[in-house]
Picture 1 (cartoon, rainbow, N blue to C red):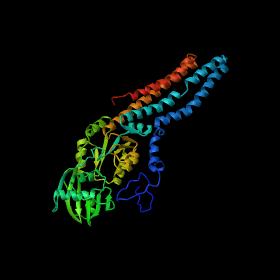
Picture 2: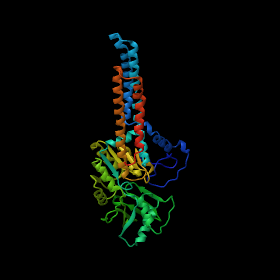
Picture 3: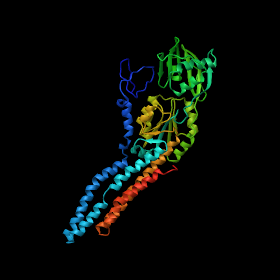
Picture 4: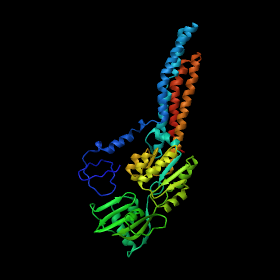
Length: 443
């Protein structure tokens, strides 16, 4: 949640400064910081068990006393009821007991998920727990942020529409002066496009307004640079841009100066990734963006999205995801920015871009794509499917062999060697089966 601070207040590590420039003093070492504690949560990902793992753990809790009690009955009842030799039935009960050991299940199932997580990491995908890997199999809706997720996030100025007595370079210079303190990709593209501009001190009267733009007082001039919402809020009479791209409107002392259009390109694998997601059965692909309707519609058309929502503020993205959650079996959100962190945390499964993504987004996510490629989502889904198949292979194999040898042992048709094979042998077979996934190349 946003928090207002004044001089003397405590600022925790990991907090994100959303608007004005501030100076902070470090009072604790890294080992005592909040960020360190968050990283420890990531490192303890193995403690987050998948539902299948939890089922096997509960199964073993009831299964073990049941088979011990059954083994006692096998040893005691036949001699009492039929007068058969106790030593014979006691030996059969020992064989039954050895066979019934649940080690193959309890050991191989977690190993299956560890193998899947390991294969994912080899492919540049960080999965923070087995539960998240298994959740990938249940997705029916994936919601995407646009900038930096579907698109490159490498903005370039493509148009400058002047509505005042200024040249193109003068407009870019004024815009760069007010945008120089922002780390937003759109702001940086304007700064890069300006040949020369005045550098201002870090204690300038500057404020970044989330979802709207920036405003500052520089050289006694009040300058606004942002979207339509910022112009309307400050009662600026401006001319809307009709071209495709992100429009930044520039005003100075209440006078509209110009509009700057910045364009972004789809990532090289975006189109193929969305097509592959459709082929995998993800039939509800949605895009949320703060961009204008025209730009969002063009991207949605190229990717053949099922739906898209444009001109959204960060809190509106959360609201929209909450609406979609009610209509979905399992929903994943894919994003990369600071504004995406609340949505990543709110969704059933959060997926963040690890290269261009902000620290807040990466920490809030359950799955991190280290190469920033949308196609890695397809890879993650394929790995999750292979892992699920592997885990159930181990479960069926272990239960089938154990059940067969247990029945044979009761009728005296299984030796102790068969029992050892059904226990240790099956456990080793399950482990070797898990090892196959790490050698998978074509995913």
